[in-house]
Amino acid sequence: MKNKRRSTFRTMLRRAGPPAALLIVGAFFGGYAILGPNGALAYGDIKRQLVQRQAELAALDQHRGELRNRVNLLDPNHADPDMVDELVRKDLNVAHPDEVIVPLKK
Figure 1 (tube, rainbow, N blue to C red):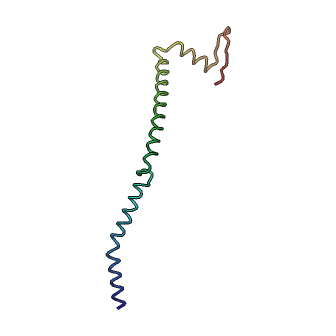
Figure 2 (figure 1 turned 30 degrees about the horizontal axis):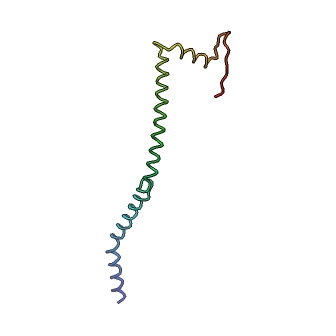
């Protein structure tokens, strides 16, 4: 009788093994889809990060526009005299003898 019980138990385990494994794997991936870093519950955080990155992008676009303007003003073919004068005075500390330089704290 013991052999019959063992064979019945083994048969039951063999039949229940694959569906149980599929259920465990499905539960894992389902839980990850809901609770994971890109899951449904992380949507609010992802949306907040998107708004933050868009603000950073806008600031970088503005800075890039300012740099593009400075590059255009310093074009060797037709450089803006005021911009050239400003850069020479700032970088080389060049001033006329009758000028007074007032340092500003930044």
